[in-house]
Length: 191
Length: 295
Image (cartoon, rainbow over all chains, first blue to last red; front, top):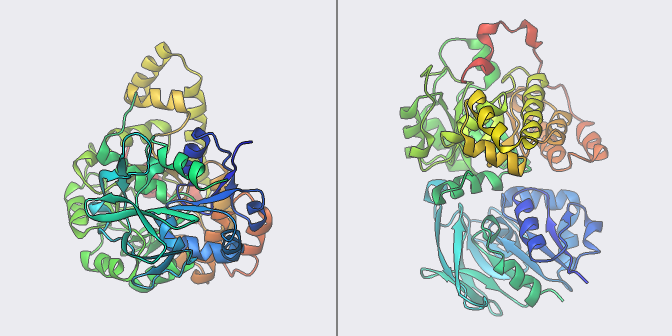
């Protein structure tokens, strides 16, 4: 049976995640209501604006629903999705789901004119470890708590991290055509 | 076919992150904060909203850099600002301020009647307005990373935005049906590059996000534009010219997220006070129609 990985579709580049998941051989329903989570094996939080995400999560009832969902099922988040999943945002501007023990700084590399593309090293990926990292107004991971492992680095920064059930990265694999990270999530985290 | 260079990928990437959201015009730091708190995905910093530019007349220019910087200081979401059509020096100033997106906008008085800004020359992404597919593709050829309908800014009347969105969508459907030999002639007739027309022919969409702007005043307006194929909405005068900016801003955000759920759009609308007063398009003299600016 195909794995069914929902993509949070309140705002952001959820359609691109859906494309990558479909190409990885998964089902990828767009999730905008709490009851739609029931049939999912996992959930992806896309890129977008984290302040907008958190407001819409509360308004739709998905904030508590996702916290409950996370007790038994895995989550993945990119960029704003990572910020929303993090334990702490350094300037306190976002109070997210607190599902992975990392501290992050929003726009940690600067504004849009400072956005960049650079090679990320991800040893856990099969085959070659290099991955095209697209960093758009990207957050920076300042520290990892206990139980969180460093999965990918760009220069000296940790840009991909995970605990038992939550996989996060500060860049956007979904805007590239490389689906190895989505496949890794589906194979390793989703049962 | 049209291929994306790496720096262009970063520009279009930011536009992708803004999808499904609302971008609000703000004229002060205080309004910017209200917009962010309401769930806006970005703000457009400008000295006067389009309805006031229309009422005041005269030449409308780029906003004062200090005012833009004040807004950049108080919000964490992307900040956009407008330059005049063809005014690449204003665009250079905006880039030096570090704004996240530049709108080369017909709402300001055009500076060049023949050439738009060469947007490839900038690191910051641009959004441009269009009324039809040819105009959209010409702007993309010049480097625009996001397209929006022109609508009729500051009118509070959705009819022009609907016309422009429908026009682009209809033309894209027609292009999808054409064979290769027809595309060559069509590209010549439309005055657009064959590369881009081939992209539309194969994919049935633009290579950059397509947003709606110009006349959106209510949650139902936002829902309408999203259902017609817009991927996000710009609300200019509609929020801070209404009687209840905070509530209206929140309601339009909700209606944009749940654009296909009329029950939610209804609930979001029910406690709102008066929307901005609207203008009948036929009462706007031809010379004052902002959408006629640009080509």
